[in-house]
Image (tube, rainbow, N blue to C red):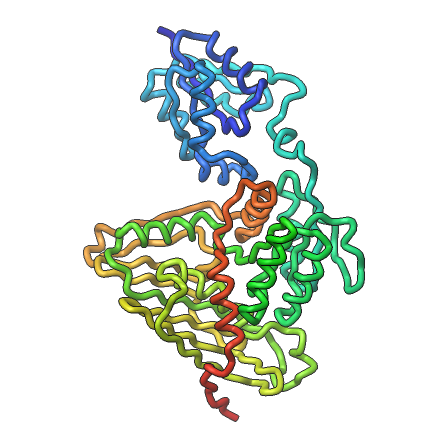
Length: 428
C-alpha cells in the first residue's frame, strides 16, 4: 500500500483545497492530511486564520478524501510523521517548490499545481477592507501602523485630527490622553465607526457603561486595547494556572514600570503624558482580574504624587484583598523595578520574567526542581497584530473579546477613585 501525506491550514476550505486533496489522494492508496494547529500557524506568520483548529479538521474530514487526519504542531514534525507513519510520498502545492526538497531523503516529494484563481486570502477579505484611522498621538502609533500591514482585510489610513471627518474610515484606534477617551469614543461611535481604544475606555464607570450602551444601540463594536491579553503565552499561562497545575492560586504579583525623563513638577511638560496608573495599571491588573475576578473585598492604592495639580504619580502600588487570595501590582513611570509576574499556588508557581507583558516564555516551578517546566511561544509585534486580527474578527461577528465589560468597568473605577489613594511623601 502506497501512503501519501500532505499538510495545510485549510482555513475556509474551498474548491482549490479540495482539488489539491483529490490530486494528492490519486498519488497513492492511503492519504494522511496534516492540519496545522493555531499556534504553529502563528509561528509561520499566518495570524489571520478565521476558523479554529477543530473547525478546519472537521471541514477536511467532511471531504471524505482523508484516510487519516493528524495535527501539525511543531517545526520538524514532517520528518517525524513520515518515519512514524511509513509515508511513501510527501506532496504539497507548487507555490512551495524547492521548500521541502530536504524530505527526499525520507520519501518522494511531489509538488502539485494550485488551482488558479482560488485563494483563502481572497475569501477572507471578500467582504471588503476595514479602513482604520488613529485618533491621538503616541509612540505606539508607529508600531500599530507597521503591524496593521500583517493583517489581511485591514488598511491603515493615518491620523484623524480634531475636527477632521471620520467619513473615510470604518473603524478607529484611540490612543489620545485618557482624559479624552470618553469624548473620542463618543465621537467615533456617533459617526458609526467601530472602536479599538487603549485602556482605560474612560475614567468613570458610568461613562464606560454609557459607551457600551451607545455601541450596542448603534450595532457597533467597542473593544478595549491591552495587547498582552491577545498573546498566546499569556493566555496559556492563565489556563495552566486555572487548571490546578500549581494547586490553588492564592497570590498574584505583577510589576510594570518604565522610565521616562520628565520634569514631573512642570505642569506644561507632563500635561499630555499618561501617569503611572493610566499607563500601566490596566496591564498590571489583567492577570489579577483574570485569575480572581473583579469582585475584590478591599483595595488600597499607594501613590507618589509628583504633581498635585495634575494628580500625576510616578509610582503606585495597588493591593487587593479577595476572600481566599491576595494580589499586588507595582506600576511606575519614574521608578524602575523588575517587570516580572509571579502567580503563586499551593503546589508551585508560575514565573514570567521581565518584561512579562511581552512574554514569549514562562516557567512552572515546583519544590522539586526536576519537575519544573518551561514553555515557549512565538510573539510577533508585541501582540499588536494578534489584537488587530481579533478586532477584525469581532467586527465580522466571529471573534472573542478577552477584555470583558466587567474588567473595563473595574479598571475605570480604580483609576477614577482618587479619594481612596494614599499619597506617599515625596522626598525633597
